[in-house]
Image 1 (spheres, helix red, strand yellow):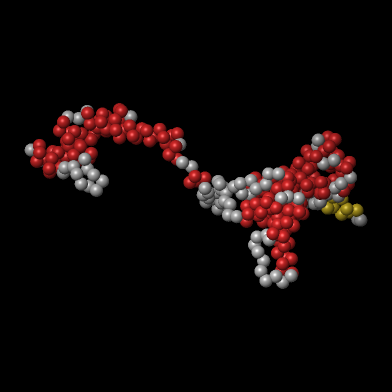
Image 2 (spheres, rainbow, N blue to C red; image 1 turned 30 degrees about the vertical axis):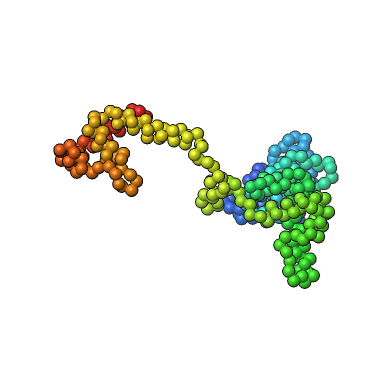
Length: 313
């Protein structure tokens, strides 16, 4: 806030620098807010940096961070081509910015903006390498350099081909282009070919996170697991097998001969296609009773078997 009195202008700074950023509900509002935050002059930056260095002043650190949040937003836009959420890129960049502020030395004679760019990019690079694909695509320093430069170099080759009015342009690098990339980035031709294949291939996330609309996303991990060998499933399977063999035998042994035969003929001797076994009327003719009486005996036997199975389990 500025207060003018005659020809003099005085700037009033808030007591809490974090109060400059309101509670925001979306990324666009955040970006708009940080772009409105005031920049520090060289003298103000030096003052706050010395307060942080000499007195470990948290408020001074906050002012340094807040005035450079727009820098993180600007740098993060350079990495949107990797398909990762912009908000996550900004968040990781902010971590790098805070690391830079913590290590910034005002006596080195450089502005914080120049010093912080390295830390912001390094943090974003780490995030991309860890989350971009199912397989880590870059492990050595040379491979990381190749990973972050190959995309832009391919675009340059396409632009050169268009300028030369080439009839067609390959989506993949030619032998001469592979050699040029390998020489410029000081890597092997084989590494260029492998990196290009992995970056242009159809890799998928092994365990994708839910989408922004809350719907569950399914990846290979959902169907790669062998549930049949999961310990709990194996125990349940053994229990079912035991009930289907020893348990049934024990339950049948608890019945009298007539009840046992009725259960066997009505349930155990029936085939999958419905053949086999005996009907209520056929059993009624065997025992000289009504079909309803056979049904009653069957119901009573099933209740007794259910109780025996419960005790067996």
